Image 1 (cartoon, rainbow, N blue to C red):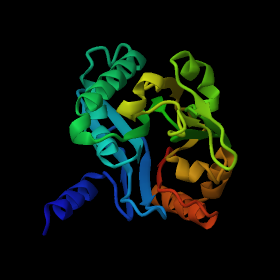
Image 2: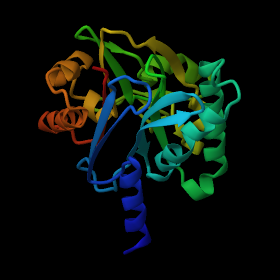
Image 3: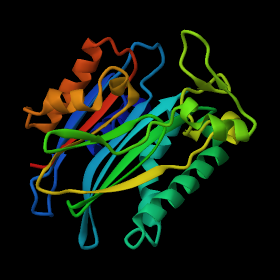
Length: 284
């Protein structure tokens, strides 16, 4: 067995993903709540290897239980999203103010992690990655952060609500141009920062960083009796499906893993050609 194959098996066992197709599930163990998660990843039609990675796990930290969920969608290589999978949550939880100022800790850890990635550019390559992270604290408070266009959507009382912000170049044109960059709008193509990157915020991308932000948008949401599910997915899903369509598609699928797989298959059926990664968390 090669080293790559051994690493692949270790990632699958640990609940991390990056392959042609991977799937898995888990559940809350100590909060006393019936919270279950499932995930599914499918490689797109591009010739390069899968560039999506994810984290989906519950872990005990002191007297607290944390649900850690994330989608990392890489571009120009898989080393940066793989690094994020291994280090971003670790850096967040290491911040001393995590419990007193979770949002501040996340912002600081995002910045530190991006700096580390840029320092390791020779090792990690010139690529980058979007990220959406969700931290569920004791089953009652959800803190979501993101850079790029991977998205988090929550469903309460059958209504979808987007918790993250899609960082599209046109949306942040003023900031990009203020830093000396530009946004291209070529007919038949999506808007791109400096004619290259289709998102305005990302980790890595050393050659574009002077015009590119890695500052996350961060928000909190309380989990109440009306909260039914949380969906995290890369843009391979959201390019072909609206937030409400995604929620409606799995509203009757109680098994979180089956729900995540159904969403990826629905995106493929709608002709999505991108890598697709999806996590579903069911609260009831």
